[in-house]
Amino acid sequence: MPGKAGLFRRSSLYWHDFAGGPATRRRLRERTRRSWGGGLYKVGDKVVYPHHGAGTVVKKEQREVLGQKREYLTIKILHNDMTVNVPSENAEKVGLRKVIDEDMVAVVLKALTGGGTQMPKNWNRRFKHNRDKMKTGDILELAEVVRNLSLRDHEKGLSTGEKQMFVKAKKILASELMYAKAMDEDEAGDWLDDVLADVGTTSNGKKSKAKAGATA
Image 1 (cartoon, rainbow, N blue to C red):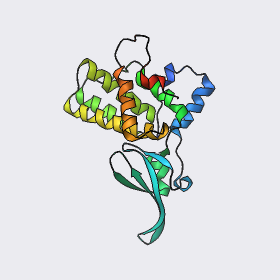
Image 2 (image 1 turned 180 degrees about the vertical axis):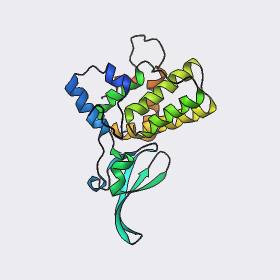
Image 3 (image 1 turned 45 degrees about the vertical axis):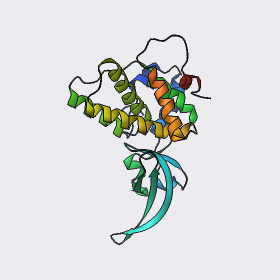
Image 4 (image 1 turned 135 degrees about the vertical axis):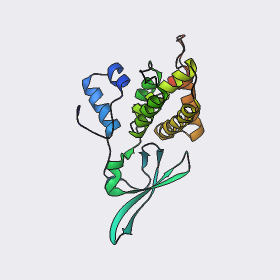
């Protein structure tokens, strides 16, 4: 769907560097872009709400709003103990999607460990640039934000605002990896920290624990 406006954008690093062929890239792109209408979600589904993270659909019910009945999804976001209510008819519009499967973890790992992409030098523009990527709900865009901020932290350090963004981006990313890899919240955070410990360092030929277990 190149050129077509959508809720998710392709990660530049992933699409240029991923080793799979065109058919593989199309298939993986569809996995990261796909958003379902609210009627297709059911209680127990693991979903991602853009800019907040992954959670579980805990309720699906009819509510009367301004004299009209509307179906609502109630989503519990574990990592920040937030509850989100989304009208089913707006699920696609807000970018709600299902959590990635474990096969996609290797793709996310590649995005996390690749070279950094250029960010605006101006602090305000850089902050907005990364915030906009996080709002897409695309896990590859989010991984790019985490990777770039990690690199900048190693090389130049982060401002207070960027440190807060880095922490939030990692928590959102870990919240989805937790479900994709069937880990608990702490394990997913540790896995991500292990990956990022190698970002910006010279390879010594050894795999980190996270890399070794990416698809295990």
